[in-house]
Image (tube, rainbow, N blue to C red; front, side, top):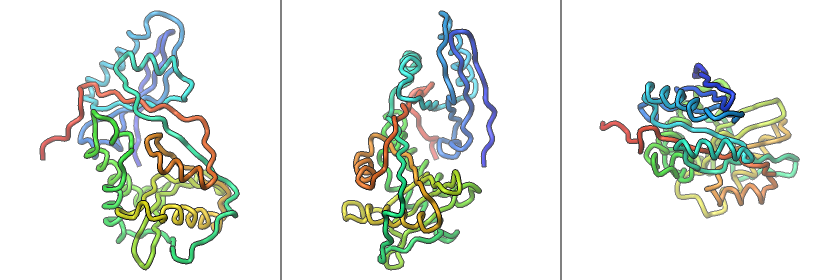
Length: 265
């Protein structure tokens, strides 16, 4: 849905690839950017090479830069922190197989969401997430974090590579999932949410099991997702369902102009 142009700053000491993130502009009402790759080399001028990127951020009025590194890339992590980046979270991509183990739940109906559901699902997404990387960043905060999840859910109804599923109980939407299909035999849960007020009642486990059974019925053999280290409850739920956790990635943020504030309306 969004295209971007990747820039590069390079020297023997540092190779840096980065781009604007146009999908975030409606959320921040300003430019944000992402570092897509960083590699430390040999030489004394890494900071000077980074300054090219810093000037690019200032010239484009970039309010937030994000970077995600493999957990063992400590040299690059330390370098970015020395330039003003801050550690935000560990991001996990757990996976589960053997989906035939999961059984359908007679009380939960899973079906595609339709356009008429978009407003309700978007409203759910705007209320239920508290541990996203924007929420926990003290220089960004929950107001922008809530906007991010609402826009994410709304865009999923139009995204050609995503579909939105709704989980119904007694005709009421109790949960939704934004699902991608990397391969015919795999599914990726891009965004998952339980309706407000339903946490702590055992419904989460029932919904997740029913969804895994649903994917098995449609021919999938593996499901993966993405969770933050701050979301301990969901982490424990995935462990109990048999998800396997690979090594995490480190998420870093940098706000070139200080705390991010939305323009006054």
